[in-house]
Length: 244
Image 1 (spheres, one colour):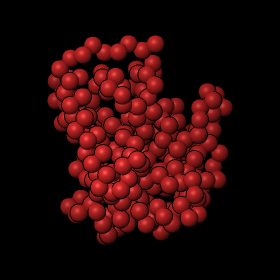
Image 2 (cartoon, one colour):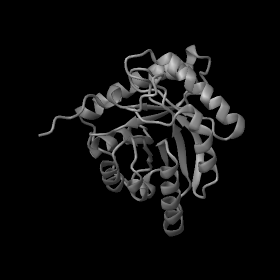
Image 3 (cartoon, helix red, strand yellow):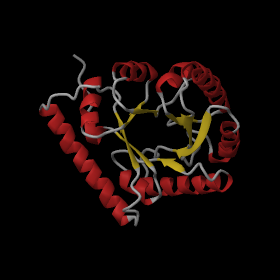
Image 4 (tube, rainbow, N blue to C red):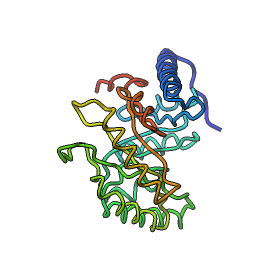
Protein backbone atom coordinates (compact mmCIF):
# COMPACT_ATOMS: atom_id res chain seq x y z
CA UNK A 1 0.00 0.00 0.00
CA UNK A 2 1.46 3.38 -1.00
CA UNK A 3 2.16 6.06 1.58
CA UNK A 4 0.26 9.31 1.20
CA UNK A 5 2.61 12.30 1.35
CA UNK A 6 2.34 14.58 4.35
CA UNK A 7 0.47 17.83 3.55
CA UNK A 8 2.90 20.66 2.86
CA UNK A 9 2.96 24.05 1.15
CA UNK A 10 3.64 22.48 -2.25
CA UNK A 11 0.66 20.14 -1.84
CA UNK A 12 -1.53 23.12 -0.99
CA UNK A 13 -0.25 24.99 -4.04
CA UNK A 14 -0.94 22.03 -6.32
CA UNK A 15 -4.39 21.53 -4.84
CA UNK A 16 -5.26 25.17 -5.51
CA UNK A 17 -3.93 25.10 -9.06
CA UNK A 18 -5.66 21.80 -9.79
CA UNK A 19 -8.98 23.15 -8.52
CA UNK A 20 -8.71 26.21 -10.78
CA UNK A 21 -8.06 24.02 -13.83
CA UNK A 22 -10.88 21.63 -12.97
CA UNK A 23 -13.22 24.62 -12.64
CA UNK A 24 -12.10 25.89 -16.06
CA UNK A 25 -12.78 22.47 -17.54
CA UNK A 26 -16.23 22.27 -15.98
CA UNK A 27 -17.13 25.79 -17.16
CA UNK A 28 -15.93 25.12 -20.71
CA UNK A 29 -17.79 21.83 -20.82
CA UNK A 30 -20.93 23.58 -19.65
CA UNK A 31 -20.55 26.23 -22.36
CA UNK A 32 -20.10 23.45 -24.93
CA UNK A 33 -23.23 21.63 -23.77
CA UNK A 34 -21.28 18.66 -22.44
CA UNK A 35 -21.50 19.14 -18.69
CA UNK A 36 -22.05 15.39 -18.23
CA UNK A 37 -19.24 14.46 -20.63
CA UNK A 38 -16.09 15.94 -19.17
CA UNK A 39 -12.76 15.23 -20.88
CA UNK A 40 -10.08 13.24 -19.10
CA UNK A 41 -7.37 15.36 -17.47
CA UNK A 42 -3.79 14.26 -18.12
CA UNK A 43 -1.37 16.23 -15.95
CA UNK A 44 1.88 16.69 -17.87
CA UNK A 45 4.66 16.47 -15.31
CA UNK A 46 7.80 16.81 -17.44
CA UNK A 47 10.76 18.38 -15.63
CA UNK A 48 8.92 18.16 -12.29
CA UNK A 49 9.99 15.68 -9.58
CA UNK A 50 8.33 12.39 -8.77
CA UNK A 51 7.40 13.87 -5.39
CA UNK A 52 5.03 16.25 -7.17
CA UNK A 53 3.34 13.35 -8.93
CA UNK A 54 2.91 11.62 -5.57
CA UNK A 55 1.28 14.78 -4.24
CA UNK A 56 -1.01 14.94 -7.28
CA UNK A 57 -2.01 11.31 -6.85
CA UNK A 58 -3.05 12.11 -3.27
CA UNK A 59 -5.23 14.87 -4.75
CA UNK A 60 -7.00 12.40 -7.00
CA UNK A 61 -4.97 12.65 -10.21
CA UNK A 62 -4.81 9.31 -12.02
CA UNK A 63 -3.42 10.18 -15.46
CA UNK A 64 0.10 11.52 -15.94
CA UNK A 65 1.84 12.62 -19.12
CA UNK A 66 5.54 12.73 -19.94
CA UNK A 67 7.40 13.59 -23.13
CA UNK A 68 10.90 12.23 -22.54
CA UNK A 69 11.35 8.49 -22.19
CA UNK A 70 14.34 8.52 -19.86
CA UNK A 71 12.56 10.79 -17.38
CA UNK A 72 9.24 8.98 -17.73
CA UNK A 73 10.72 5.51 -17.25
CA UNK A 74 12.52 6.57 -14.07
CA UNK A 75 9.41 8.18 -12.59
CA UNK A 76 7.16 5.25 -13.49
CA UNK A 77 9.58 2.90 -11.73
CA UNK A 78 9.86 5.10 -8.63
CA UNK A 79 6.07 5.49 -8.42
CA UNK A 80 5.14 1.91 -9.27
CA UNK A 81 3.27 1.63 -5.95
CA UNK A 82 0.72 4.20 -7.17
CA UNK A 83 -2.24 3.36 -9.38
CA UNK A 84 -1.31 5.75 -12.20
CA UNK A 85 -1.93 5.64 -15.94
CA UNK A 86 1.10 6.87 -17.86
CA UNK A 87 0.69 8.70 -21.17
CA UNK A 88 3.64 9.37 -23.47
CA UNK A 89 2.88 12.69 -25.18
CA UNK A 90 6.16 13.75 -26.83
CA UNK A 91 7.92 12.99 -30.07
CA UNK A 92 9.09 9.39 -29.89
CA UNK A 93 12.10 7.80 -31.54
CA UNK A 94 11.58 4.24 -32.75
CA UNK A 95 14.53 3.05 -30.67
CA UNK A 96 12.67 4.12 -27.52
CA UNK A 97 9.59 1.97 -28.28
CA UNK A 98 10.86 -0.95 -26.20
CA UNK A 99 11.28 1.21 -23.11
CA UNK A 100 7.95 3.04 -23.53
CA UNK A 101 6.13 -0.29 -23.86
CA UNK A 102 7.17 -1.16 -20.31
CA UNK A 103 5.21 1.64 -18.60
CA UNK A 104 2.96 3.60 -20.97
CA UNK A 105 -0.73 2.84 -21.30
CA UNK A 106 -1.02 5.27 -24.21
CA UNK A 107 1.17 7.02 -26.76
CA UNK A 108 -0.29 10.27 -28.09
CA UNK A 109 2.34 10.97 -30.74
CA UNK A 110 2.14 8.16 -33.29
CA UNK A 111 2.93 9.87 -36.59
CA UNK A 112 4.71 7.46 -38.94
CA UNK A 113 4.54 3.80 -40.04
CA UNK A 114 7.99 2.94 -38.67
CA UNK A 115 6.91 3.98 -35.19
CA UNK A 116 3.74 1.89 -35.44
CA UNK A 117 5.81 -1.15 -36.35
CA UNK A 118 8.33 -0.55 -33.55
CA UNK A 119 5.59 -0.11 -30.95
CA UNK A 120 3.72 -3.17 -32.18
CA UNK A 121 6.82 -5.34 -31.81
CA UNK A 122 7.74 -3.91 -28.40
CA UNK A 123 4.23 -4.18 -26.98
CA UNK A 124 3.77 -7.73 -28.27
CA UNK A 125 6.99 -8.77 -26.51
CA UNK A 126 5.91 -7.01 -23.33
CA UNK A 127 2.47 -8.66 -23.46
CA UNK A 128 4.12 -12.04 -23.76
CA UNK A 129 6.55 -11.39 -20.88
CA UNK A 130 4.52 -9.31 -18.44
CA UNK A 131 0.91 -9.60 -19.58
CA UNK A 132 0.53 -5.88 -20.16
CA UNK A 133 -2.66 -4.58 -21.82
CA UNK A 134 -2.89 -3.23 -25.34
CA UNK A 135 -1.23 0.13 -25.98
CA UNK A 136 -3.65 2.92 -26.84
CA UNK A 137 -2.37 4.83 -29.86
CA UNK A 138 -3.38 8.37 -30.80
CA UNK A 139 -2.34 9.51 -34.28
CA UNK A 140 -0.67 12.90 -34.01
CA UNK A 141 -1.95 15.18 -36.76
CA UNK A 142 -0.01 18.16 -38.06
CA UNK A 143 -2.40 21.13 -38.21
CA UNK A 144 0.05 23.62 -39.72
CA UNK A 145 -1.42 25.19 -42.86
CA UNK A 146 2.04 25.65 -44.34
CA UNK A 147 2.91 22.00 -43.86
CA UNK A 148 5.55 22.89 -41.28
CA UNK A 149 6.57 19.95 -39.15
CA UNK A 150 8.25 21.71 -36.23
CA UNK A 151 5.55 20.50 -33.83
CA UNK A 152 5.40 17.01 -35.31
CA UNK A 153 2.55 14.97 -36.64
CA UNK A 154 1.29 13.31 -39.78
CA UNK A 155 -0.50 15.16 -42.55
CA UNK A 156 -4.28 14.71 -42.37
CA UNK A 157 -4.16 12.83 -45.67
CA UNK A 158 -1.84 10.23 -44.11
CA UNK A 159 -4.14 9.46 -41.16
CA UNK A 160 -6.08 6.62 -42.92
CA UNK A 161 -2.87 4.72 -43.71
CA UNK A 162 -1.60 5.02 -40.15
CA UNK A 163 -5.00 4.05 -38.76
CA UNK A 164 -5.07 0.91 -40.86
CA UNK A 165 -1.58 -0.03 -39.72
CA UNK A 166 -2.40 0.49 -36.04
CA UNK A 167 -5.73 -1.32 -36.25
CA UNK A 168 -4.05 -4.29 -37.86
CA UNK A 169 -1.26 -4.60 -35.28
CA UNK A 170 -1.48 -7.06 -32.40
CA UNK A 171 -1.11 -5.27 -29.11
CA UNK A 172 -2.07 -1.83 -30.37
CA UNK A 173 -5.47 -0.18 -30.06
CA UNK A 174 -6.42 2.75 -32.25
CA UNK A 175 -7.62 5.32 -29.73
CA UNK A 176 -8.08 8.41 -31.88
CA UNK A 177 -6.19 11.56 -32.88
CA UNK A 178 -3.98 14.10 -31.16
CA UNK A 179 -2.73 17.55 -32.09
CA UNK A 180 -0.95 20.61 -30.77
CA UNK A 181 -2.41 23.94 -31.85
CA UNK A 182 -0.07 25.84 -34.21
CA UNK A 183 2.07 28.55 -32.67
CA UNK A 184 1.05 32.13 -33.27
CA UNK A 185 -2.45 31.35 -34.52
CA UNK A 186 -5.88 31.10 -32.87
CA UNK A 187 -6.40 27.52 -31.65
CA UNK A 188 -10.12 27.30 -32.50
CA UNK A 189 -9.80 26.78 -36.28
CA UNK A 190 -7.04 24.21 -35.75
CA UNK A 191 -9.14 22.20 -33.29
CA UNK A 192 -12.13 22.44 -35.63
CA UNK A 193 -9.91 20.94 -38.33
CA UNK A 194 -8.86 18.18 -35.94
CA UNK A 195 -12.51 17.44 -35.16
CA UNK A 196 -13.14 16.94 -38.87
CA UNK A 197 -10.18 14.56 -39.12
CA UNK A 198 -11.58 12.69 -36.11
CA UNK A 199 -15.04 12.42 -37.66
CA UNK A 200 -13.59 10.84 -40.81
CA UNK A 201 -11.58 8.40 -38.69
CA UNK A 202 -14.58 7.41 -36.56
CA UNK A 203 -16.66 6.77 -39.68
CA UNK A 204 -14.17 4.01 -40.52
CA UNK A 205 -13.20 2.99 -36.97
CA UNK A 206 -16.12 3.66 -34.56
CA UNK A 207 -14.04 2.85 -31.49
CA UNK A 208 -11.40 5.47 -32.25
CA UNK A 209 -13.25 8.56 -31.05
CA UNK A 210 -10.53 9.93 -28.79
CA UNK A 211 -9.37 13.51 -29.37
CA UNK A 212 -6.26 14.44 -27.41
CA UNK A 213 -6.11 18.23 -27.62
CA UNK A 214 -5.89 21.23 -25.37
CA UNK A 215 -3.15 22.48 -23.08
CA UNK A 216 -3.03 25.15 -20.38
CA UNK A 217 -3.51 28.08 -22.77
CA UNK A 218 -6.20 26.63 -25.07
CA UNK A 219 -8.21 24.02 -23.20
CA UNK A 220 -11.48 25.94 -23.65
CA UNK A 221 -11.21 25.86 -27.44
CA UNK A 222 -10.26 22.19 -27.36
CA UNK A 223 -13.31 21.30 -25.27
CA UNK A 224 -15.55 23.30 -27.60
CA UNK A 225 -14.40 21.14 -30.50
CA UNK A 226 -14.77 17.79 -28.78
CA UNK A 227 -11.53 17.06 -26.91
CA UNK A 228 -11.76 13.87 -24.87
CA UNK A 229 -8.28 14.16 -23.33
CA UNK A 230 -6.58 17.36 -22.14
CA UNK A 231 -2.82 17.61 -21.56
CA UNK A 232 -2.28 20.26 -18.88
CA UNK A 233 1.12 21.05 -17.40
CA UNK A 234 2.18 24.54 -16.37
CA UNK A 235 -1.19 25.76 -15.09
CA UNK A 236 -1.14 22.94 -12.53
CA UNK A 237 2.55 22.48 -11.79
CA UNK A 238 3.85 25.99 -12.40
CA UNK A 239 6.99 26.90 -14.28
CA UNK A 240 9.84 24.51 -14.83
CA UNK A 241 11.87 24.05 -11.62
CA UNK A 242 15.24 25.77 -11.51
CA UNK A 243 18.18 23.44 -11.85
CA UNK A 244 20.27 23.68 -8.74
